[in-house]
Image (cartoon, rainbow, N blue to C red; front, top):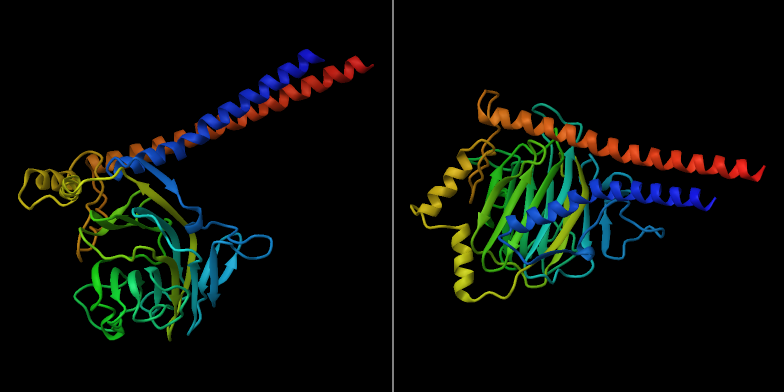
Length: 375
């Protein structure tokens, strides 16, 4: 009996070890990749107080880190619906405590969809906020006007003619004095943006805000292909309150849409203390002088290479559109990457279920031996 129990323990331990071996790398490798992407940061630490996932609420239908309000509805299995596809709605979600990290990354998944199709209008849009104020409903996509801080606006309805198309994703900075000009779609406060087809996408729509104090601010979007991010804009200097509240709001007017927030993941990017010279060098790595070798190499890296993705943009230049279906290195890389992903997923889950089955089989043998000895 002791021998059978020993075999069971070994089988269970083996099953658990193999499962952890194949499950853990995705999180570990993801953090390492993020650290490399963020210029050799010393650590990346999740901020629980500024992150939210399903089921979104506890047993008392509350969340100790976030407040909900307006027309927001929590579906514990799917999303937080800030507005339904109905006219004149506004909903909000705000952190209860301010964000204290000097450098941070905020990644959120969202969905914008509704009954309107073709050339029928829809709107108005969704916004992410980093402001001194919190949970104050108002006319700017469900939040107050004359705000102090930064907003990322996903505007799906144009109130006037522009040189760019809509939907439009843009960054706006408010000083608490200037009003958001609705007639001009906030162009008076815009600091950067891009025009993207972010509604009814075939992949999960996500936005990633990266801020390294005194170095850069970047907004990247995930909306065309899985695991492919495109830079919407990147700025060398932007003003953000030192302890901002993080919020999400959405609004509809005469036209409407479902505006859903699926998840929010916020992390503290930790660097060792840098001197003024090190900060200047850090900025140069992100914004090399025009005509320099670094700038040329950066441009070449964006536009060529076997495994290159579509190029990023800065300022108000929209991200490049998806390339046409033609042969070449890009097509080969896409096919190879997709095939490798499918094989890896099948192999991983096959081994996991195989080890679980082996553990179950060992347990059944042990039980049969135990029952036989009893009689």
